[in-house]
Image (cartoon, rainbow, N blue to C red; front, side, top):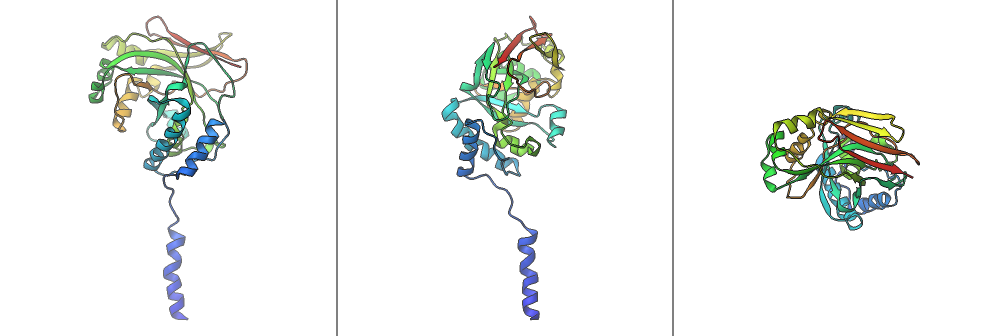
Length: 281
């Protein structure tokens, strides 16, 4: 009896004290996630603990969704503001992939229920001029290797049935909610310190059709300067090529689309105070 008790004492803690850890979700799990996303149906939150497993899941998901939404055309940074990081107990941004077919023209009309958990946010797109940007060390270096900037309203999908359950790894696993976005007209880039400063100091303002202000934030709300989003993506391991699009992240809160709502985002302080707009039906 003493021997049996001793053996149980050795065996029991192994399975009690060492539960199985989450891993990269298997192909069947990611296929189910992709079906939920494509059908705009809320999904369970992906079970990933590490960023390595989250990026593995993301790669599988992007491979499936790109069959419907077109080949990847660039990258997006998310959680690029301190409030956004605090909301998900994150200490740094997260990254995702942009698809060719997600880009809609300025002034597009979009169903308010375009996703499982649809949202919209003021964003900005940087266009990479050449692969030399991969050697950038400063915001000025990034600016020197951009060919254009676009006003951008991202239309992300929070995907999961309970958004409060999202963490930095699970947000990464759902490809940071990339779904759609409205692309404004290209702005020429001025490669000097004054333009770099304008990007940090601009006021990004969201208004509705009646002129009511829905959100406002400075360019510096995104990592001190939106150019720093691309620097962070470089530090995370991304390598760019000419023509890549880069979504820098939200300048303000995620907002809820509603039928009949029309919104405009204005970038006060950039040359011409450029605008981009979208309406929801």
